[in-house]
Length: 202
Image 1: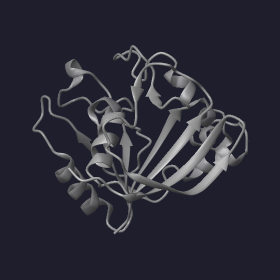
Image 2: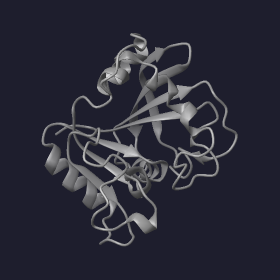
Image 3: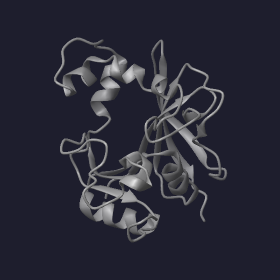
């Protein structure tokens, strides 16, 4: 059985999305700044069929973002769309070519049949086999799994920006013990892999 992991870009002041999130602006004002480090890498550009980009430690990190994952869990907003878009034809922000080349389980309570985090993880583990299950976001989904003691590894990409307002990642997660096991630093972002040692339970 693989591990349950999470990869999140986060500001220095703890936000994973800026203020004023909306359907048109899903990661809020300034939120795109948290991901620019990734878009500038050679790895990202290759994955998009483009050339150029920096071949750097950041690019190596991007190479590994999707590697080893056998299934994904994400929240309704991360999958894409507001309440008006949730019908049987909606396939998420990525349409027919999503970046996740593995089964994706979407947590939602509206308007489809609700699935709890336990059920979603059980289904994702069954689909993943020996591979990892990645909690893809957004913040609320990650918070639920971390607070429930179901997350094994948290990878934070700490970007040197201050957002000031928005959606925090670590609100309401109790007091987990996070042991840093790997740190990779670059001028714009510090990548820290934490093992979740003490897992608070619901």
